[in-house]
Image (cartoon, rainbow, N blue to C red; front, side, top):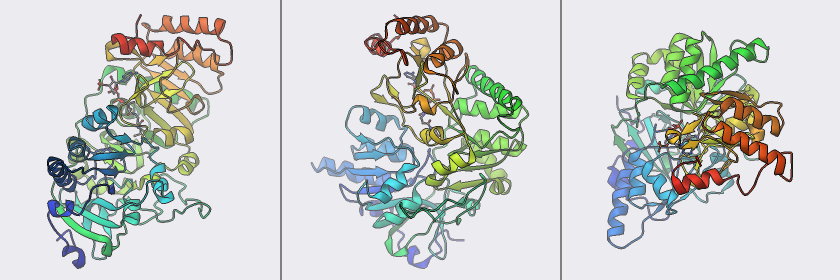
Length: 502
Ligand code: COA
């Protein structure tokens, strides 16, 4: 059966080059895409070619690109390389784009993922000229069957003047029905409670509404998502996961958590995968996930009954994960729901459900302020993503990292964080392979003692102890003692010598 089932839209099929020619310099474009899934595969590449040609003619051709989250080389990579981006938000992980952002060539707005849609509704990004959205199919009624991510697609489709739809034949048609698009959001003061009380509740409709009159092009593609393979879980990640799972057991024993814990939010990457694997080995069952991304580890947990359901806004599966998903798609269909990111990350829902947030970090300071985004305070790595949505509002906010980076040249526990994404007020638990610091109910000076004793690597522990001792003695204020002239000296030493050690 054709994937483009609405006659008016079927008549608008054209090449990616023709569709990209509808995009003009200076436009603001809302594109689909979240964590390397569901991004448009053809139009951005054709657009980059138009930009390169324009630049060769001595013309400037740059646009502003808004997405759900990170995409892939075929979107962020090509547009950055074509020098085609004036502004990018709200999250990226592309090496080429990152390098240009850190050279000051592209403005990058690093925004809480739950905030993007409402900022757009408030008009803070100006007019959205074009939406470029990947879909699995176009239904007879013109609504779109979303693909492997939902992200901000509803908002871009609602707000954009013109819409370009990429219909990707590679996306399994069996995704039909897995999505839940909620149309009940409003601007203040007209907001009503969002009627979601269980992580797997469906409160919307499975398709994206799309005004056929706004659609200016439909492009057919047959191209895979980014689908990076996962590295095998390393020993450090296993140890971090082990500490966290022991802690969950301790909390259950104390009666502060039930045997099913609370809905889990888990960041992406090796450590997150290790935590998921650890839950499985630890005999947990009947858990739920209310998170952003479904990665390979979650499929295993669903298959084993460790997880009974998972709510997210996107997949982020390796090629092996995709195969696994397709082989048992009917089973996963019943247990996974993909939502718009303003709902998957909504502070109201994260607070109501009492999520356990588990995210990676770059560094934390001795008082528990967490840096998730910047190396030495000035160079961004990826962005805050959804970590703040969950950390700020969850039942418990855990940040996980190896105690050292760069082969020991960097301590991930430092006197003062060189950039703060999550303040000490929003951080409950820090975990490294050395151990876990439960910061709840501790004063700043107690926090410093606990973090250094439990989380710092033995290489850096004496240096931190020495710093704290002198800060306690010489700091003017003794509530959060610091030696201001020295507090960021570790980072400066790293920039000067490549090593934080004296
Ligand atoms: N100082 C300097 N560099 C550091 C560092 C530190 N304290 N800690 C880590 N890094 C570097 C690593 O060396 C690595 O760089 P390399 O690739 O050049 O070697 C890079 O940062 C990534 O670190 P890695 O150990 O591979 O960790 P990760 O893949 O688990 O990523 C974050 C860690 C913090 C970058 C990642 O979790 C992130 O982007 N978080 C913010 C978004 C988020 O939390 N989203 C969650 C909701 S999905």
